[in-house]
Length: 153
Image (cartoon, rainbow, N blue to C red; front, top):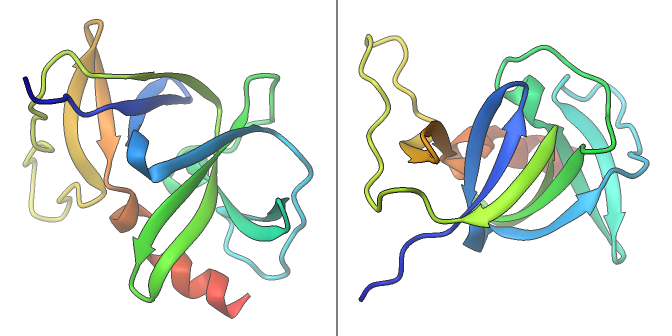
């Protein structure tokens, strides 16, 4: 029997998103973030993870949602991605992290084809978990522009 893909499920606002578990290095409690001058709104700054500076993005702002205050459930998900210039480590601030899980079905539905102006380029697919829709993020596409920004910082 083939292994089913595992995902880290996370909440942003009232929505449920997922990241492939193989891209997640660790999940951290909130900690102080050093601000970067003139950074884009969604780039919160940098954190230190065992001596390495990691840029942190606010997933809410990256997805076009309104900002929110940190709570006891707010987490930073440290990701390892392949960018245009090689490996990239960065953190995503999410409202909460739920679990590492498999989705109800192996196959993801494609993003809806509503119109040509919105192609859902940052969505790997739509799955379901316990009857709820789960948007699986295409992290390299969603965060692709970040590599250029963080290299300049």
